[in-house]
Image 1 (tube, rainbow, N blue to C red):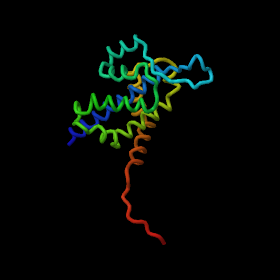
Image 2 (image 1 turned 60 degrees about the vertical axis):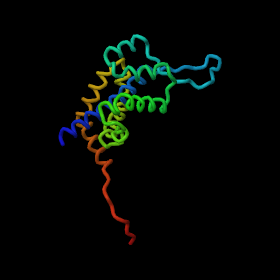
Image 3 (image 1 turned 90 degrees about the vertical axis):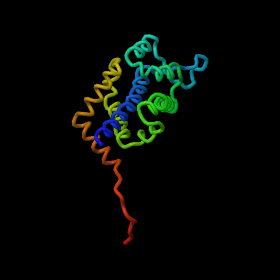
Image 4 (image 1 turned 180 degrees about the vertical axis):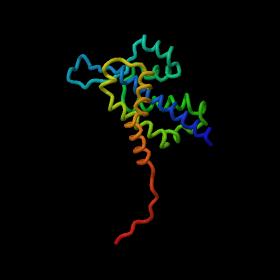
Length: 175
């Protein structure tokens, strides 16, 4: 049973890495573009990864190259990001390191959702620090792990786990 639990947590971590990597790409490679002919028009947000960065991704994180390639030079929205993450997981994790068609249930699991909420909170709390200069994805992962293992990170994780647990209740009684 312990081996099965370890395997599950390994997969949760791998799936979270995909989300983190996509977020890292957006954090450092977002570019705002406006229509030159219409200065009043809303800006469009694109993910533009320079060739040098793509080569570094290929060298250091080859497993994420398909994700970076897919997103590169695309106009970015929540839907595009979500689609890219899900497509990557289906094509590179589901049926390869986990049983076919189990990715969705893992993404819905408390373990994954708590990790995702911790990551999103970490981003919000450390945005200024992350914005001070370019940090590699490895550094992001290390900083996130360090924060998760700190007392504030552990306290938040405990609260998130408790908030996701449901307490069975019987029918309400009216007095």
